[in-house]
Length: 402
Ligand SMILES: Cc1ncc(C[n+]2csc(CCOP(=O)(O)OP(=O)(O)O)c2C)c(N)n1
Ligand SMILES: [Mg+2]
Image 1 (cartoon, rainbow, N blue to C red):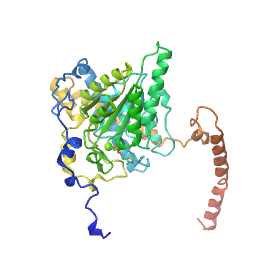
Image 2 (cartoon, rainbow, N blue to C red):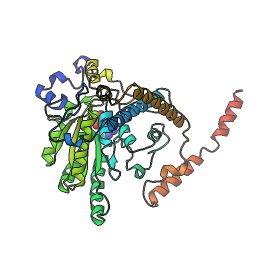
Image 3 (cartoon, rainbow, N blue to C red):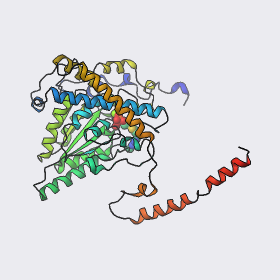
Image 4 (spheres, helix red, strand yellow):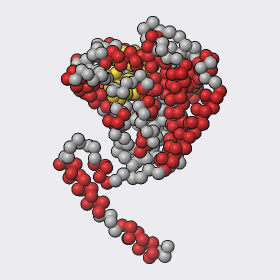
C-alpha cells in the first residue's frame, strides 16, 4: 500500500459515530460524584451515606496518600530517565481512583492488580521500593503477595481477573467452613483496554453464576496505549454489568470521596454474599502509558489540559482549604514528607542487590516440583559455563595493552 493511502491515524475519532463517543468517552449523566471539580462537597441519594462519616481528618489522610503516591511516581519516572530502572508505568491522574478504592478495603480482602496500581499498594502498606524491584530487573515479582493481600503485578492483560474470581470463590468457601473468620472479598483491577479481553467476560459470567465475592474495578483512563476507549465499547463500560446480571456503577474516578463510597458499598455487597459488582472509575491517564511511550503521537494537548482541570489532588486541596480542614502548614509538611520519601526511595533503589540464584525459582509452586528442579539445574550449569569469562576478558585487556 502506498504511503499516501494509509490513514492518518489508525483510529480516526472523527469517523466514529457521535453517540458512540458520548457513550464511552465523555462523562454521562448519572456518574456518581460527591466532590465537584471546584471542591464542593455534594450528596448522593444512594451512595452518599457511605461517605457521611468521612471527616476532615480522614480527608486529609486521603490527600496525603494521593500526594505521596504522586511524589513516588515522579521519582520513579526520574529514576527511569536516569537509567536506574528499565521502564516505569506512571499513575498520574489516577490517584483518586486508586486511593479511594484502596482505602475502602478491609485487612482480609485480597487485591489482584494490573501493573499501574501503585496507589492501591500504598493503601495496603506495601513497602513502596519493592514495587520497583521488577522495574529494576532484579526480581520476577518483588514482594510476597500474602503479606499485604496484594498480588504480584500482572503484565498479561486481564490474566489476573479469573484469578480474582477463583480466589473469591475460595474465600467464600473457607468462610463457610469457619464462620468465625470475617467475610472477605477480592478486587480485580483492570483497564478499559483489558475490558475487551475474553478473560474479563469469562470471569464475569463465572462470578455471576457463583455469586463470587469479587469487585471488578475498571479504571477507564481513556486509553489503552494509543487506542481510545471509544474503540473498546459502544456503551459505558459500567453498563456491561447488566448483561451479566449484577450491578454496575460509573463513578467519577477523579473524585476520591465518591470512589471511596461506591467501593465501600460494593465490598459490603460482595462480602454479604450478594454477588459481584462492576465499578467503572471514569478517569484519565495524565502521563504516558509507560516511559517507553510518547502520547503526543496520538492525542492532542487540549484533551490533556481539560483533564488537568479535573485533577483529583487539586479538587480535594480546594475542598480542604475552603472548608478549613487543612492549612498551609499541612501542605508544607506534606511536601517535606514527600521529598524524604523520594530520597529514601532513590537510596533504596541504588542499594538493591541482584537476587540470589535460588530466589528466581522459589515461590513458583507451593511444594518442590520436578520441572522447576530441572530448570534450576539447567540454569546452574548454564551459568557455570561463564565461570572463566572474567579471566578471559582480563587477558584480552592485557593483550590489548589496556
Ligand atoms: C494479553 C496482552 N495483550 C497485549 C498486551 C500489550 N499491552 C500492554 S498494556 C496495553 C494497554 C492496556 O490498556 P488498559 O487495559 O486500558 O490499561 P492502562 O494501561 O490504560 O492502565 C497493551 C495492549 C499485553 N500486555 N497483554
Ligand atoms: Mg486504559
